[in-house]
Image 1 (cartoon, rainbow, N blue to C red):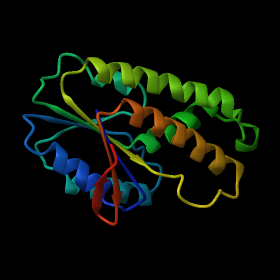
Image 2 (tube, rainbow, N blue to C red):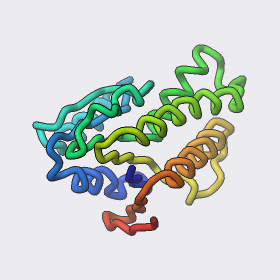
Image 3 (spheres, one colour):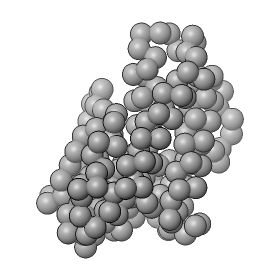
Length: 180
């Protein structure tokens, strides 16, 4: 597994796509959910920047079911983006509960179940796995409770992914820096 991290608009997607080039087949797992026009435009931009022959799978839960031992060693699975997956899982688990009442210990357990399954799937899949995530811990402490907990949960998930990854790159201003 390879992990690509960095801030917003740092070049993560473009770099991950370059790593996937040359693969026999690329399975692109898109974790975004479209709730408004702005998000629709972002998704459309990403779609335009991907090669048309890549197989796009839209999933934000149970992505482990898409990363199977049946994939070929010449294939690549590119999962984008882990922080979006985490966001979707948090809101899914919280349901209609007001944000100020969220139990982040319980919510993080649910996120970790998804991550556990993902890591297990990656361990038995022969294909190259590339995961894109956002680095959220380099700024100031967020002002609101939800943002603070989200930053913490995403940071812990990123640490788990990085620990299991064979290689990790940090993208800064479009330049990749191999950190593992």
